[in-house]
Amino acid sequence: RGAGTVAAVDLGATSGRVILGRVDQRAGTLDLEHVARFPNGPVRLASGLHWDFTGLYRDLTTGLADAFRREPSVASIGVDSWAVDYGLLRGDRLLGEPFHYRDDRNAAAVDGVHAIAPFAELYRRNGLQFLPFNTVYQLAAEQSAAEQSAAADGVVGGWLGLADSLLLVPDLIAFQLTGRRVAERTNASTTGLVGVHTGEWDDELIERLGLPASVFAPIVSPGDSLGALRTSVAEQLGAPAGVEVVAVGSHDTASAVVAVPMDPESAAYISCGTWGLVGVELEHPVTTDAARDANFTNEAGVDGRVRFLHNVMGLWLLSESVRWWERDGEAIDLTQLLAAAASVTAPVSVFDADDPRFMAPGDLPGRIAEWCAEHGVPAPQTRAEFARSIIESLAEAFAATVRQASVLSGVDVETIHIVGGGALNELLCRRTADRSGLPVLAGPVEATAIGNVLVQARAQGFVDGDLVSLRALVSAAFTPRRYEPAR
Ligand code: LFR
Image (tube, rainbow, N blue to C red):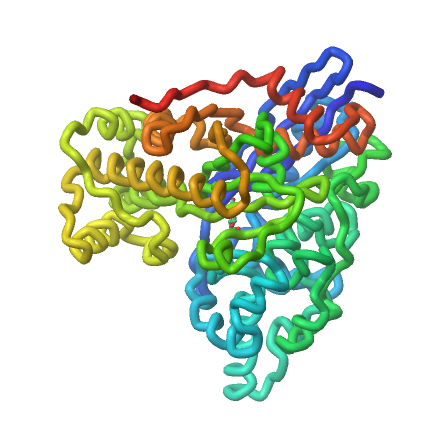
């Protein structure tokens, strides 16, 4: 007691990792050991854009087996990932690889949902910003695919009709590991089907939308035990008896916010990876008309907090541009590209990083040029200029969104914390400080895994206390890098 080790599985849109976290509260230390890192990304099948869930599960279990070899005393496992996406099960059987939220089936389903429950009503009920991939729209897309196939081949109900449970990605992994079917609260809050005030499945909305209420699993909270590993899984992983899976903030952003070494009364955070999640931590949701118009979300945080934030497009703009330039096999060095971007001296255009045209995979540089042409501003010419324009546009969106978060929530923001991979991007951190006029504190880079570790460590009794004490451990272990705004 007072010290111990847990394993965090953290899956992002471009890579997954298994990390050991050693926590010693008396010594006040928190150490991470990176055990495995594996690629992740969309796979285009005949049915659309999917995740390779089976491959991810193989890679994460290989990583966990390595974790147990290195550290046989691991007490528990926690899993987090991106939000909104789910697998359908019938019995133990997974009904196909989960859809990727960037698949274009969702856009067509939005109007149908809003015809039944207008967006203003949805916002009052679930407090979520509009994103076309929120689970509620994905399920409507499942329903319309089912109707089309019923018309074509007479098979009624589709995959959703066949399923007896729907589990979000981290819950689906926890199910494979333990056999328990649950819906962890922070991630369930991103479906659009959980009441923002009740924290429970919104049965009335589920019924009105014609969704099968029985597929939704009981809601659990971060820190709850999900029980021991299945015997066959324990054998496969080389895990000793008694290792359990613990629910963490299974929405990656919820775990990241736990590990922001901030004072929520005077700080904003940007959890910056594929997305830039920009906001503040609150005790109570804000579902005013102004918050709705600004498209701010009230997602559930750990310990009953509210993540009041807005999704900015994030480093996806850069990674997907690079992927486009690399499509013929050329390899681009990101460090060199960013150095070249930093030395661009001519002014570059700032585009609207929030424009929905940037959501789908493909020719992002082309779409940025198109945006510039439509708005009568010069398009970037070289790759360095594109990269610079992306960074400037993100920094501008970050600064504007921090200002909005402050006005809408009443938090008087004095500092901006940037955590996640974006904390390594010096140009982005510096320009965010410049454009906001506020100091930026960058790091920790692995905030999500740290938040995952800390919630497990607390459940195991290795640490105690509230978010303030957990964040004190983060502050002691990781010194943020400070960027002062240029005067
Ligand atoms: C970040 C994130 C965001 C969510 C997006 C899609 O990884 O979880 O919070 O809006 O991915 O799930």
